[in-house]
Length: 100
Image 1 (tube, helix red, strand yellow):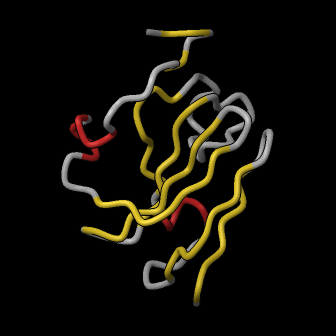
Image 2 (cartoon, rainbow, N blue to C red; image 1 turned 30 degrees about the vertical axis):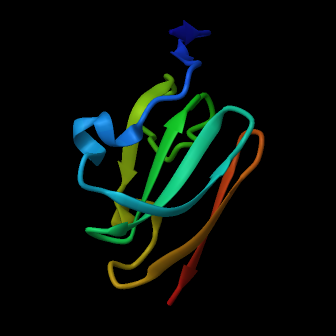
């Protein structure tokens, strides 16, 4: 089901090919976006939901992210060996905390 162009019913995120082997440890929900931190196979940040202000991290589109988007650390100013420890989402923003 879709509402306003985005997903409106829960689904198992691991049914998506991008995330089938990924294990998540935490996340945050904003008004229209969700960000998840993975710990296996790597510490990464995934975003999905509305992206009108690039709040999911995908700067290639302002369209709704229906599948999780992997935010590569190098593309969001985080060094490869830095650990993403927390993410907080608000209405149109997402804030990422790292351990250097």
